[in-house]
Every structure is written in structure tokens, then in C-alpha cells.
Length: 375
Image (cartoon, rainbow, N blue to C red; front, side, top):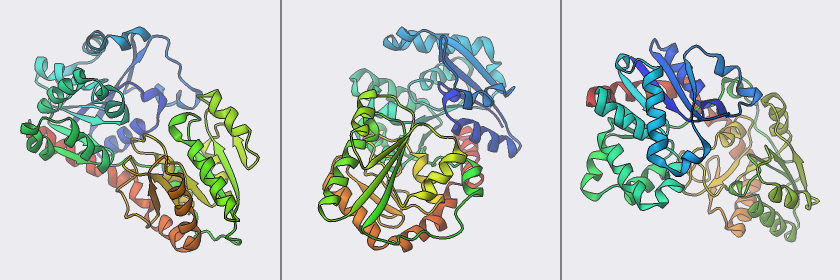
């Protein structure tokens, strides 16, 4: 198979590189068209993957084009046609429904190339707030040969809320859930034994993610206060890139919080191992690889109900799903984990191989073949 990825943030995440590499390892060809805004910044940690000869990086629109959807998509489409020999591909995979999916839709109409689309948090929680985009979404998924979701809650939410009833059965039939995988580093450095808490009243919590309101650090802080009222001594470590200074200022006021800026994975590994429970009740989360990273080190996880990580495991198996703003329930779930800590920690280590790219890439390759045949 010859596959074209359409991305708008290949330069800001490893998941597309990791997936492309594994698909190529299976004997297929993958090229990536990374459409970005003019003067897009590439962070040092991603510069190496941008050197890949199979990555076509194009600054093809301006910042203000985000307010003119069809103009932006036309610019991306024109840049792609000029940069790629479109007819040589067997399948196009747009990694977003709206930023790329409409391009794939037009490429199919003009060149007859089948496509699949991945549906992510920004598609559901940003674009689909506007009625216009519901019509566009139905147009794109109707013509798509496959629709990919990273989690069961997102699939259910999207199909039930946004797909026209008469088309629901057809769309559902060509939909699939395939999770993200982990970098090999995490599985190769999996902790070799389950963790234990020596003193159940003294617990170290960890949150790793971008410092903004979406990661919902404030709910964790309030849950810690409730635990302190019950006699627990809690230390909370927060690690991540600062996106919102107001959130950071709030964090720095709390004596029980240690804040650490972004860390490389080698440093982060040590931080995971120094803590007991991973807690991140994000408001929105397409998947959340940090939960899986924490599992490789034996940390039970608390994740958001109805968001990306929910539904992969039975509740209570490797941790608990929680309503993002229910601080009472978050604190109760932390206590549940403490009371059954070693068992849950062991299950985290036993189940983290679910995020091995080898198996996940097989699922993708199978879905690609099915989608090509479905055209």
C-alpha cells in the first residue's frame, strides 16, 4: 500500500511519526504532508523527525485563515497537489476530521483516491460547536472509506450527537476504535515490579501535562484538600510545558505542590517512579498517552470519564474514571486506589503492553486494507 498522511501538527507530536514508522516496517509506503501556519515553530525535540525524507512540510496558510475555514482548506489542498503526486497513493489518512478531512474529501472527488479520517478532541469540542460544521462533518464521513476514533467515548459521542440519523448505520459500519501506542522507550523501561505504599496516609500524586485549564489541575488541588481533611498527607508533583501563566501562579501558591517544567522522557521516567498515583481529570482528552506512560511504571491512574482513556479498561482495573469536576469522587477514587494499591499497580504493569505499536500498527494496516476495498 502507498499511504498519504495529512497532518497539521506532525511537527508537534511523535504519534504520527511512530505510526508511520511501524506501517513502513510492515512493507508499506507512507508519506506525510504536514500543513502548517506560516513561520510555524518547531521545538527542538521534534526537529529530528522533520528530517525524514518522507515528510513534506509546507507553510501554506496564515494565522488569520483559521477564521475562514474553506479558504484555509483550499490553501492546504493546493499546496498538497503541488507537492505530491496524488494519483500514486492507494489511500489518504487525514489525522483530523476538519483540518485535513475536507482536503481528503476534495482529493477523492478530483482524483478518486479513497480516504479515512481520524476524529479528535478539537473536532468534537471546538469545530462541532458550530452548526455549519455538523453539515461538513456529515459530508466528509459519508464519502470516507473509514472513520477512526482513538477512544470508545468519542466514537459513541460523535455518532449519536452529530451524524444524521438516516446515515448512522452506514457510518457506524465503517468506523473503528484504535488507540495510540507508546514510544518503545516506555515499554523497554517498564518497571519490573509492582509499587507499594509504605504509609497509606502519606501519598505522592503526579500530574504530567500542559499547564492549562484543560488539564484541570484545580480539581486535583481541591481533591487534595478533602484528603487532607481526612488525615492524609499528600504531595502533588506537576510536570509540564507552561501554556497559561494564571494556572501556574495558582499552582505555585500551594505548599503541597512541586512544579517542574517540561522534562525529557529519561528524566520523566525517574519522576514517575518516585510517585504513587497518576491523577489527571482533563476536561477534554482525545487519548492521553501519559496515562499509559504512568502504567508502565506501575502507577495506578485516575482519568476523565467520557474522554479518551475511558473505556479501554474496566473501571477499577488499572485505576478509575472520574467526572472531571467532581472533587469528592476524585478524592474517593484516590482512597480506593490506596486501599488496593499493590494489586492495581500490578495490573498496570501486566496490561500496559496493550499500547505496543507493533500490535496497534497491525490493526491500522488491516483497517487500511479494508477501507481501500470498501471504496
